[in-house]
Image (cartoon, rainbow, N blue to C red):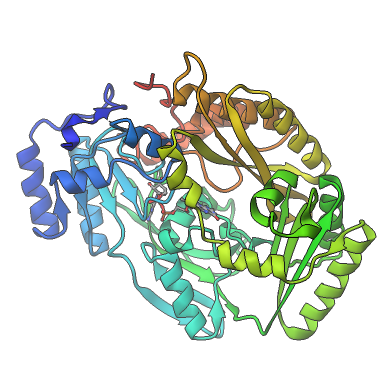
Length: 492
Ligand SMILES: Cc1cc2nc3c(=O)[nH]c(=O)nc-3n(C[C@H](O)[C@H](O)[C@H](O)COP(=O)(O)OP(=O)(O)OC[C@H]3O[C@@H](n4cnc5c(N)ncnc54)[C@H](O)[C@@H]3O)c2cc1C
């Protein structure tokens, strides 16, 4: 099948470049002939990111967005010149890293130039005294972690997608890794950044631990999703590679008991690197072969770091689990988690079975966590077509949690798979909002969640849009995302 046979979903407001030949020769001048492409195969490769419904669309012969050019700049000067060109010609520019985003953030829904950051892949400096690493933003997460491990360090940000995501993508989508309860989320790990603004100016945020120099402008760019600037360099905190790892697991009778045990652990200022609470249905998905987990809520812990501290963390973790009726399940469930933690076969297997599958991560205070969990479950499980709906909690703070729902199902009656998808997302978001939670914990907004941004931000949404206008008056940087609700355009 030729890619032109695919139906383009977001076509109505696509920017049409009037003189493509002229832009092509401009790109050639700026980048040389090897760093850009408008070949069909390249354009097709960048029609989607890892948004799950995108896999169903591909199988149905649909594509979400169609860029005009893909470019691979090698230095900042080239990026600046590209932004000048884009502003003068009013062409959209979409930063693209590894395309592992799951909310459509990197899809070129307005056409234009995809600026792939993969050639920005260098480690610039490891500072062993300050415990920092400075990298170019396009570096692959696993390449960075391996290089750090080799020198006896870890950066502590290990998302499930670490093998297929970049530091720039983490920064732009505000990522959280599997070891986040100890090392923090990406906003805790980033110390400094270099950003190229939409009109081509470079700004730097020095990697100094703290500054009382007015409002923290740097925070505006963490989670900016490629709409306010292009991240070119990032300085991250690093840590000595853990001396010891203790693997623990406990099975609980109820979701509430497991939450309470973990809340009490964190209250003692004990931060296991990994804590994962699987609700009963998700425990079945992952630990069916373990008798002790039968009809239970499984919780796995990894405590790591200095040996003496790890011993104490282990002792207190065990004490709190046992005080909340947890049953010790040994190291095996944690070893099983280590073996399978990057396995996501459902993502590619389910669309072929015409199943619509996705995950939704949200956040809550401790006070509302169990209430939110039950409210979401009650709202979604009663929907027609749902065949799977499970949850785990995998990011913890002394003041709340990040919760992660997984669903699978089939459209019924007159519904399309998009209707079904919407139905589950809507029910989840409504239940989260009604329970006082936040609509997103670490996947970001992109195009999928933009329709709830008004609900989440209220009057502040207007200020966010003003910021966007000030920094990007021509709206060239990743248009149609975060601040605009375009999700339904062209989708039927
Ligand atoms: C199987 C799987 C597991 C996942 N697990 C996790 C997880 O554990 N934790 C987690 O947080 N996320 C997870 N994700 C989501 C995804 O990996 C993250 O959102 C990741 O941060 C995206 O990085 P990327 O480099 O692939 O960025 P992309 O998908 O290429 O881009 C994401 C967004 O960032 C923008 N962007 C990219 N680079 C730059 C830059 N240099 N400057 C400005 N903007 C830029 C893009 O325009 C886009 O809006 C997972 C995804 C998959 C498919």
